Length: 381
Image (cartoon, rainbow, N blue to C red; front, side, top):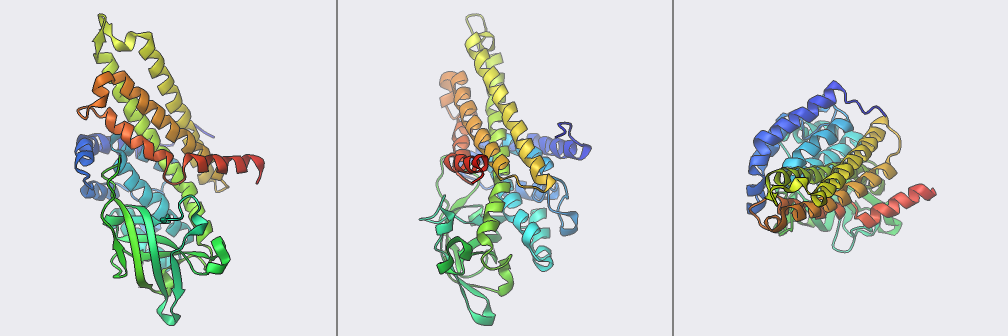
């Protein structure tokens, strides 16, 4: 693995960093406070190629690699974790599966608008009774002859859902086959059989709207199926492997934000005649934070490189997501401690980082699920 970034990767990072500093960071606190979806920022990210970083140029994307993607996503998430996860879902869980498994007609129909930010995608897998046990989902797809498929069911925690134009969802086309009977569908969010509930009132990442999705006799054409019948579960697992690399990059951005804010504060705040950064207790915290952030970044780069090489990367993605999410939470917690009483106030951004970090240990596979995935990789199960 070459740790020297290519000119293209550097350009992706620097473009995202500049945009994040100018456009995203100044609005991050307001986005959080008002639970405001940053739609105009998403359009601008699309214009920069950030909503379809790894989508081939032939289908309207930037045509870059996964390493470039995580570099860009880290920068956006460092500024605003909510904007980062909106970008992550569209890239990893919607554009990725369509680009990998879609027909030319499906790619032509969906990818140019998704990659440009003209449209936004969401991924509907979790249900009220199937989260980590995705194979137990109950949403059904019944064949309706030449008319296509009729979808019924309920989905939970659909990030981007209330503002999405495209839904990539999983449904059972053969209830007797368990996970092998699950299929994937690309559905226009304007379908009259789809209805989103009110946005969830969340602890963090408040600018990324999330809601339940209700499907009531939603009719979709046969060509809405993504991949072969019964391939949906494998498709979802593959999408989540890529998605976990994205969430790891989001977690890294949150950790960096907390660390950089804490470092700046520690250099300015004085006690006993000197900046608190010169007290050993604070120095050790900052040293540990910096070390763990670098370790997480290297693990993310390894997972992204494995993905770009075309081989299996399930274990590496799970390791990256597990480490980065837990680092984000430890760093955010210590950053609050560095700020002392001020860290508990909404006047300072560190409490937002603390709230934003927690979800990275939960969505796209909890830390417990990551450990199961890693253990099976280690044991060859």
